[in-house]
Length: 290
Image (cartoon, rainbow, N blue to C red; front, side, top):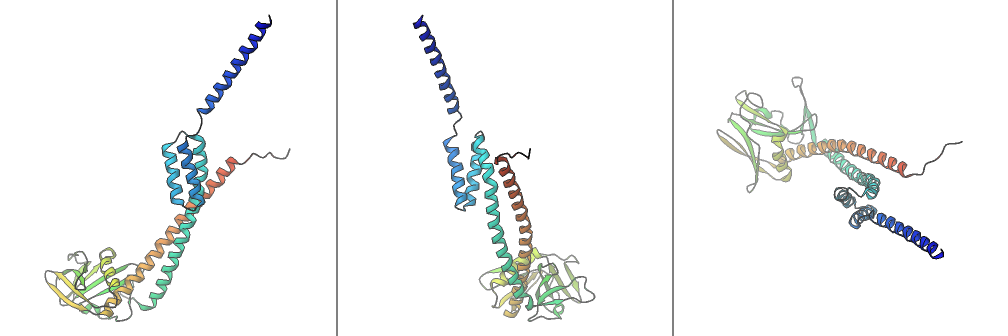
């Protein structure tokens, strides 16, 4: 009978051991993918090294390539808002530095400008104070202006009328031009034997950039359309265009950066809310007072 009893124990032990092997085999099937783990480890290291772009790239790769790695995906979900938080704080710092620069630039340029508004005008505008000609509309010239909301635009005046539709600036080797603005009685209109074109901010931008790049130097100004007239644009008028353009650009960028800061602040808040939630998920439960 003893052999039989020993045999039964042996059989039971063998069966139990086999069960353990199966259990371990089952567990080994759940092992994390080494490549997936490497992506998470790389993202964590990049985060520690303040390389937030790389951290984001690696987390994106982990999410797309290994969606079945639930444990690693959960860890990545906890890491991602931390990456976003630090990256956003860095962006806010850069944004604030640029805003400060543009404010200094606008404050420096504004004293060079003159506000123009008469009782008959619906809206006023800024022009360069130096070289300002109150009788501009009775001459053949161009004028850079900045609107009340900080947009740079150009007005061209030709008297007597030339039927011009666009203007060119040239330094002899390179040039910039506005697009054509055909006569329409509004943007391009006739008055007192002359003609006036008000170019939109988008239509004026290339001229403003060109003037700013050539500040301090005379240029050639051409009025083109059915006929062409070319005049010399003295350095003082080039500087007038450059100052108004630079002022408007600083004002516009500061406004855009202010909007961008609001967006970044919202992103930061979302990231911090998510960090708080994921921290709550991983924190041990606490019982209330019994």
